Length: 53
Image 1 (spheres, one colour):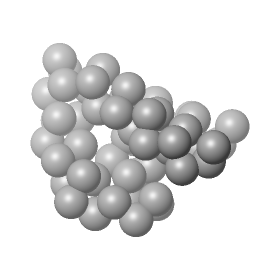
Image 2 (tube, one colour):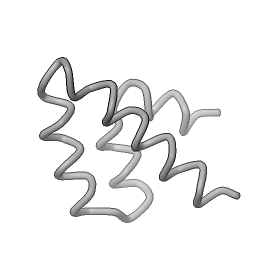
Image 3 (cartoon, one colour):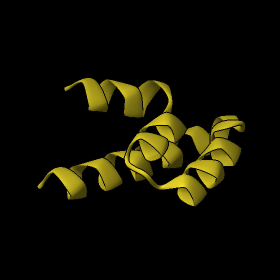
């Protein structure tokens, strides 16, 4: 539950917490744009859900 909240507020942080450093950096770049925030959030949710399943 906490990880889902992190994905919505800071998708790049969710990537860093999962050990995906390069993907986290790309996610920061996406998160800096308003349009890119939605794909970055979806991407972080997909990555975190795959690793918990």
